[in-house]
Every structure is written in structure tokens, then in C-alpha cells.
Length: 404
Image (tube, rainbow, N blue to C red; front, side, top):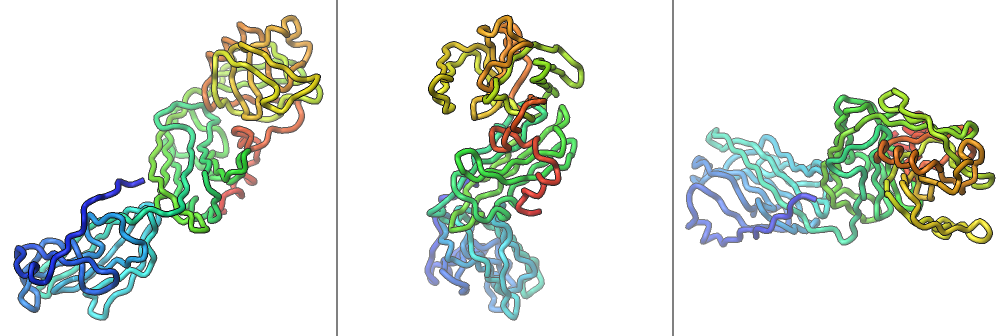
């Protein structure tokens, strides 16, 4: 969100104006497109009536909590206007109309709530001197607003499969309006696309990824210019964010459930091939590409948290070297109870198990955003179960954009 200004508008009577400095014009605020205005620029003493010529703007410089019912008025006192631009990073540019003599410009586009606007105007005094003015103001906050929870965090280093992901706390009816104000740039440049989905809890979510994995060393910037953006149904955005992150080494892992192995590579070079177990019949490990979500050295695994009860229930304390792949409960972790079975039996409820020493080594190699791809299993992981984005072909992915 842009900084909210707190200065109060200047209000003076006609008498006080006459007594003001000849170098500056101060005008009262008005609720419409009249000639009363505020915060004019340095005056030039060559207007037709002998007074100072200047450009005045209403609402004026420093006005805060401006009602969205107000119109923006730009008035060239003792001259005419040539250009007027009223812009906000979120809502964009206001349209407006001109008086016949081009001395007054009045906005026709409604103001958006919770937005900061900048007015830039240029013109000429009647005697030919140049006039110019820059002013800014902030509108009152929306009564019903939305924000987006974004990943990855600013300043982080992530793996090559990490998408930009934003989950919104309110329904987004006008997805196109929101998507237009989300921008991802990369250095070196790479083509990418947004695609909308519902998160596992039913919230609107939009992810951005390139056609193929990011290149190691890429610097990525997310810009969210959502303050004042109408998402539909009277719900307005509040966020102004610039989020920078960097792509780290390409650490990729492939699990073959038939061979019961995991092959780990770094920047194209195979590091190790590990013996693993995976999900047993009825609880098969998800097929397809999953992305590392988090790492914890020790965790308690209770089957009730993922909806498994009865004879298959389990409650395991102090499970070591846990790498989370999905919110639905898929982990890579140490499974010493399967000692002697690695490469022989797939006996888990969907997790990928390995010896304690191998699990510790794998834990030390991977980070947030690294891909783990499972082959020869069943039921491909859903796109919204963590970051299953890479299981969608590029053509289908781009069709998920609200601007496609």
C-alpha cells in the first residue's frame, strides 16, 4: 500500500487570499468541478486580470482520505492547460473532459478507494510563460478490501521449480483486472504466464511460471500494484509490493516407484542414487512433479491429520529429516522401520522413505522450490496440492490466464 498522507487541506477565505503572498495561490477545496481548488504551483504575474497565473489542483497536494465521490479538477488560473495526467499505480489513469478554453480539466473516471494519485499538469499563462504543477493525494480506504498472500518471500533464494504464487483472502470476480496489475520480470528474461485456480481451501489463487524451469542465477521480481483495484463486487485491493528473489542451483530428484530408487542431480550432474520406499496399494505416492514446500528436522506424523483412521491409522513421534512436498501430507523422510526393505517393499501411506543417513543427506541437499518428480506411480498430483503447476502442459497453463 502506498504511504498515506496526513496533511490537512488548506482552506482560506477570499479575503485571506488577497492578503497571501503574491508568489503563491492558495484555494479552498470544493466537492465538484468548480473553480475553487487547492495547492497551486508557483505563480507567474501575467494573467489577464493582473493577478498571478498558476495551475491549481483539487483535491490538492497532501490531501488524505479523499472521498471517492470527489472529482479531480485542474484549473489554469490566468492561462490554459496543454496536458493533464492523473495516475495511480493500481487503478491506472483517469479520463477527463476539458472546458472550451482549455483552462479547466475535470475527471470523469471515478476515484478508487485506498489509492494514491499523482497529478501532473502543464500549460501556459496568458502572457506566454510556462505553467506546470505536480500534486498528490490519497483516497479514503475501501470498506471491503482484499489482499494476496504471496510466495516466495522477498530476498529468498529458491529452487528452479518455484512458481510465483498468490492466494487471495476474498473472492476475485474480476480476475482480469487483478491480473493486469500483477507483473513478473526476470533477468535473464524468460517467457511466463499466470494461471488461475482454486486453492485447497477454495480460495482464489493465481500462479506464475515459465514454460520450463527457471535458469539457475535468474533474478525474479514480482510487482503487485493492487491498491485501489476493483476485484468485483465492491472489493478493492490495498497492496503495493515489489518482491525480489533469486533462483539457486538446479537440484532435481526423480523417484522411480518400480525400481524403488531416487536419483538426485545438481546442475545436471548426478550426485547419488538412493534406495527408497513409497506408497503401498491404495495409498500410492502421487505421480508427477511436486515442489519442496518446507523442511523440518523432526516432526510427529499423525494419520488423523490427513484423514486416515481405523486399521491404517498411525501416530509416529520424532520422524527425522522431513522434506514436505504437498499440503496433503506427502513427505520425504527417514523411515528406519523399513530397514532392510528399501528397494523391495513400497509400504508407506504415500510418503517417500529412506534410511536415516540417506534422509539426512537428502535433507541437506534440497531447498524450497526444488522439484521432486515421481514416475511409474498412479494419480498425478493436483495442480493446487502444493505446487503441482508443472504437471500442466504449457498450452493448457496459458489458457488459465484471465487475459488469454
